[in-house]
Figure (tube, rainbow, N blue to C red):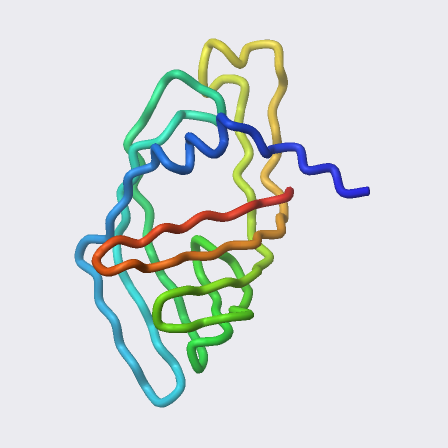
Length: 139
């Protein structure tokens, strides 16, 4: 039996509440390979379930082969089952973030959670200028 530890209204709202955009984005295509480079910013909870928020910056680097398989800082190593003009569906193996109990006073006594490996199912749908996307991560 799969134990999906993190699937709650809080995590769904956290995904919706994350506002991110790429700045200084650059895309290069060489044959069947595409390299995407950028810098992303996100306004997100300090840890899942937190009432305290932070602004985070991270590099966006993705190497894609034939619009099918990819290696990405954000999504790990994976591929797309469906990769059409208006919708995508895929899976990947990725690194999950840990947290230290010293990150926030509310975490004192709860112990640290180490970073580890995870599995992700993700998808997106584009309707005109609007894109809807989400993912489920186990790990």
